[in-house]
Figure 1 (cartoon, helix red, strand yellow):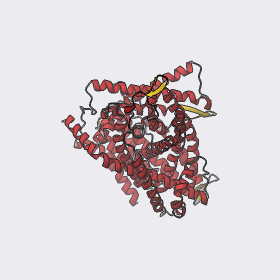
Figure 2: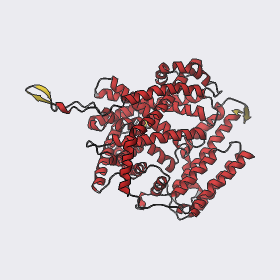
Figure 3: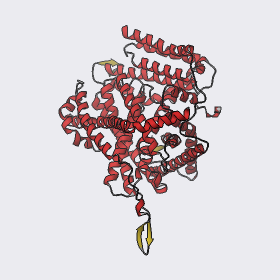
Figure 4: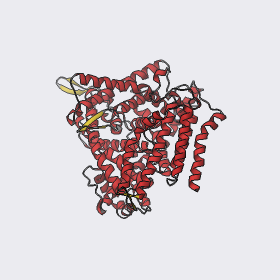
Length: 253
Length: 355
C-alpha cells in the first residue's frame, strides 16, 4: 500500500520503536495500561515514574513532546467531569483558597486524570509509531477474528472516501445558500445522512462484486506475515515490566 | 462519552470485555446472515458491506447538527445502524469503529474498550432494535410507523446507554460520587442527546425509506406483494411465491427476555451486598417492582430525582438494563449452540481454502 494511505496520526520515522513488530507493541501498550490502572492512587510518585517511562519511549521513538501533548485534548470531556468531582463527592472537606473541597473527590479526580492521561498518551504513542496496515496485522496476530480485521481494514480504506463524500455534500449544500443554524435544518442534514448511507451501501455492493470477480471467497490471504524474534519481544516487554516493578513498589510502600 | 482508562476498575472492565467479545462473536455470525444476498450466497459479502457501513457510521459521527445558540451535537449511530442494516451488523460496525477510535485516535481507553463496546455498541443496539421490532409489530404496517418506531427506539437507546454506564459505575467505579448524582446527570444529559439522536435518526431512516426501501433492514416485510390489475380487479402476481418469513427469532427473543428478567432480579439482589445505600432499596423493592417499573424508568418522562421512591424506580431500571445485558449473554449461548454445526462446516471450508 502506498504511503498516501498512512493516517494523519502516524509519524513516519526510523527508530527502534517504529521497527518493532506491531503485535509486540500492542501487547506492550495494553499491559502497560493495565499496570497503570491497577496502581493504587495514593502512590502519587508512581504515576510520575510512569510518565517518565512514556517519555523515554517517546524519546526512543523520536516523537516530539508537543505532538503527544496536542493529541491529549481528546480527553477533555472526562477532564471536565473530573474537575467537578471535588465539589460533588460527599465526605471529609478541606479548604483551599477559601473553597471547600472534598478529600475523596480530590483523590477521585486525581485518579481519573492521572490514569486517563497516561492511557491516552500510550495510545497516542502506539498510533504514531505504527502504520495502520501493520496495526491491523498485529491485531490479527493477537487473535482478533480475521473477519473483524477485514471489516476494520475496509473501514479505514473507505473512511476517507466516505468522509470526503460527506464533505462534498456539505460544500454542495453551502454553495446553494444552506446554513445549518438550528433545529429547523435537521431535516436537510438527515436527508444528507440518508443519501450518504445509500451511497456507502451501494459502493459496498460494487466493491464486493469487483472482489468476487477477482476471485475473493471471503478470506484474505495473509502475504506479509509478521513475526517477532525473542529479542524484539524482550525489547517491547521492557516498558510493561518496568511499569510492573513500579506498580509493585507502589503497593508495598 | 468514551470511557477512558482508570474510570472503571479492572474486574468490571474485564467482565465487560468478556461480554463484549461474546457479543462481537455472535454478531460476526449473525452479520453473515443479515448481509447475505438474495441468492443466499452469504459469507463473502460481510467484510466489504460491513466495512463500508462502519465507514458510514464513522463519517456520520462527524456530522454535527446545531442544537441551539452555537452548541451542536453529533450522532452516536447505534440505533441508526441497527435499523438500517440489522442488529448484528450494527453491533459489529459500532464495535469496529470503537476499536479503531481506541487504538488509533486514543478516544476511549485500551482497557476500557470492552466497557465502551458494551455501552455504546451493544446496549444501544440491543435496546433500540428490540424496542423497534416490538413497536413495528404493534403499529400498523405502514412506512410512517417505521419512522415513528425509529424515533422512539433511538430516543430510548441513548439514555439506556447512560443508565448502563451508571450501573457499571455503581459496581466498578473507581471514585465515590453518589450514584444518584451520576445517574441524574448522565440520564438528564443523555435524554437531551437522545431527542436530537431520535429526530435525526428518524429523518435519516425516512429519507432512505423514500429512496431505497429495500435497503432498510428494519422495514423488511413491509413491502406489499406485487399485484396485477386483471379486468379491473387486483390479482396477486405470484400467489404461490408469498415468501415465508425466514426462521422467526421470536421464541429465542422471548426466552431470552424471560430469563433476563429473572436474572435481573437475581443480579440486583447480588448488587445489594454493596453497602452504598441505593442497592438496599433494590433488594427491598426492586425485585417485585421491576417489570412494571422498567417501562417507566426508560421513558423520558420519568422524574429522575433522588428520593426513596425514585430510588426504587431507578433500581428497577437498573435491573432492567442488567436484564438486557443478560439477554445478550443468553442469546450468545443459544446462538453458539444453534450455529455450532454451521460454524464448524464454515471453518472446515476456510481451512480447505487456506490449505
